[in-house]
Length: 358
Image 1 (cartoon, rainbow, N blue to C red):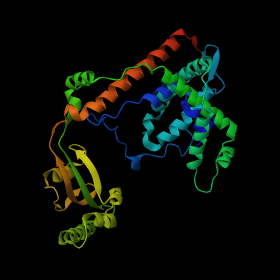
Image 2 (cartoon, rainbow, N blue to C red):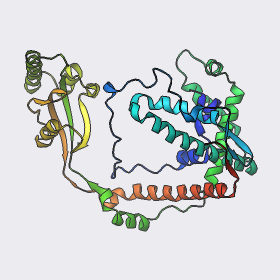
Image 3 (cartoon, one colour):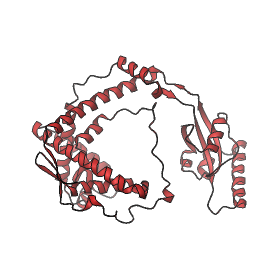
Image 4 (cartoon, one colour):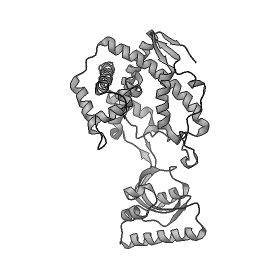
């Protein structure tokens, strides 16, 4: 929990990371980012059940990889952060892609550490002063999030660090944040005219596809199911549907009690989704049902479902007035990110960066 504050801080104070923390662009709900390619975790071995196999990136942790204005970055520093990053990735990376992902992360971490060295030096030169009250507030926030039965001091001891070291790292992070904010304080807010120009130039971003909001109850298939056991599951779901239609139980309560889907905790609600998000059998039923109707039994590769559509939205375009504020925030953040990027580039352009190891 405290690695990011008490040890490497996982690059939280680097220019790139600080910029991301400070100036993350607003979420573009009208232009959803495609979901990453899914991985069947049931078919993916636990990549960290055994140590990652050695590769050329891990030969000598003590080797100096880069020297930045005379300050050294070792391979060990990079690998320490890489190890944590790969643990977070967990079993989501197919084994055949593991080494490629490691190499990509290694290069990104090395680049971020270079930027961090430059930002740290700039913050020190600027002699940024941090209000100690902010440090104390951050400590209290950490204390409030401690698991029941554990104190902050106990957690710090388990990480082989001290409260003074934690405060110093928080102080450094706050100084970096203040310094990076100073590089954007004169950036003008985006205007309504700029927002309208962006809206008109990017119609695809504001297209709203046909969507429905729906809930379902799933009786899941098992590998060992026979035709007879499947028939029993179908009969069970038919009985549940009959009870819902008779009014002896609500759809939501029936889902909580009977559904094999994690959505049961929300009364079966799957939220809103467009076409192409669900398996074909489920999608065809959901988009053809009337709102409020409890549909007939649908079979999919997952099992038997009954579906209730709670809302249907036709395809259309988000109006400018509805999107205006979001666009203005997005464009303002773009300007700020550009200013931070230009500043970091100026630091790199004037620095002496020596690549010493492959």
